[in-house]
Image (tube, rainbow, N blue to C red):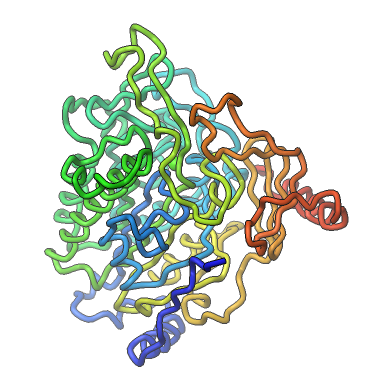
Length: 489
Ligand SMILES: [Ca+2]
């Protein structure tokens, strides 16, 4: 079978010197900024920019093998940085965002089920304010912080991004919106556009462009101070309302891939506008840039089911992901599944001033690892609390460094998964691949105990649970120990 990840980039002299420089700079922490040229003494800290896309699937970037996609800006971050072939997020939005922003398993922050969606609704689950987010850790070190785009860690106004370390927030507090009227569309819907804790209205304005505008303004206003900007795009998540200039580019693709490809390229294009702004103000070399996604591609299809929808859109209006246009290659699953296609995502870190360029790392990493990685590169101390992520600096320095995660754990509600080596046990799971594509069955049930092997030619297709009960037993015990340990204190 053709390997998808066969493209190791050569180690050249420049990359080698950068790797050596990284080691030296790391040893010099916290004064790492002193090695960066052209910054005033007050500007020694590098900036941090995270592009966090929504429902961008496992291989849905050109540089991950999807050659039918046009993603020059995402590819440029891999080409000028370090790309990870085994990067794990989570199965849906909420736990993934907790993982990235706290560096901890979502269970520790109380995020093991859907959080409060409507800020005006009854108080529900909201991420615990005791969490120390990456924004809080950086803000304490003097950073200006902003999150533009999607929050989805609890919409209540007493919680939310501005209560979790972000100086500024603009965007949606729940899971998704129509890009023009800014209404959440499931059920009867509700308006979801906020600046800080103030509801704002911008009818007819294309939301990804509003995010770009906010990001450009923030960069202009904070170019002389260290900043942390998290651009949590609401795309390529449905509704797939793409920029029409990509229509002709993908005319040859069949649906639903065509629709998804267009919104992927729209996402890439808006990312490119922010990167251009960073270049224009001369801060590209002084900015750590991370690009990743929150979960696999969606296979959902949705239509408005009521006559009196609050958005004014008519009953029958189609707003889903058209059954799923993502491409996972040999990997099984999609968003909402613990198969690889649900949780394995594109990920890269680019910081040419200090990190090697155009290299690939195959070690297993998780989104929790970016938290301590960023703090190490910024010379900011880790908060004194249990983190589940570990700095990727050793892995960035060496393709032979061991993974930090010999055992990996995920849980969402009453479903969980454990990976050890090539074995992965999924309990009470499902296969969401194509699940809403007009199939008679609403979802593909799988046995409650599913033991898959990632080294198979068709990974996770065969269930080994009956023939390898000792592995099922060991992984189950590992999960039970973990589940006990990650309970909120
Ligand atoms: Ca998502």
